[in-house]
Amino acid sequence: MLDVKDSIEKLSWSVNHHFLHIKAQHDFIRAVAVQFELAYTDFRTIQMALQLAGEEQHSLLASFTKAYDDVYAYESVFAMRGLDEFNSEFPDKIEDYQQKVDKFNEELDKVRELQKNNL
Image (tube, rainbow, N blue to C red; front, side, top):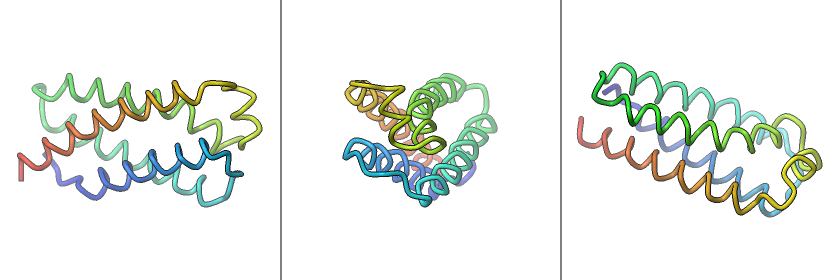
């Protein structure tokens, strides 16, 4: 597997930091949008590494992609349209968002473990 340790750590930080930012109802700041775009690049880098790792990593690729897509659905609204739009689109959904982030963290831990075992 390609060395994607930095992408794993940066993506983990961004997803979790952005969730806490939104949960705390902090206003949109430009840095979040930049971090969001960079996080997507890290996601795609990890995704590519899993694809190149071969067919035996297909199930992890699929579950990792699903977990990120679920988080992305929440985070993208905030990053692209701000806190008011997020609250309008996802009223009372912070618990579900938290569950999506938790699932994402579980899947990313599997990728992290795979990375450790292959180096």
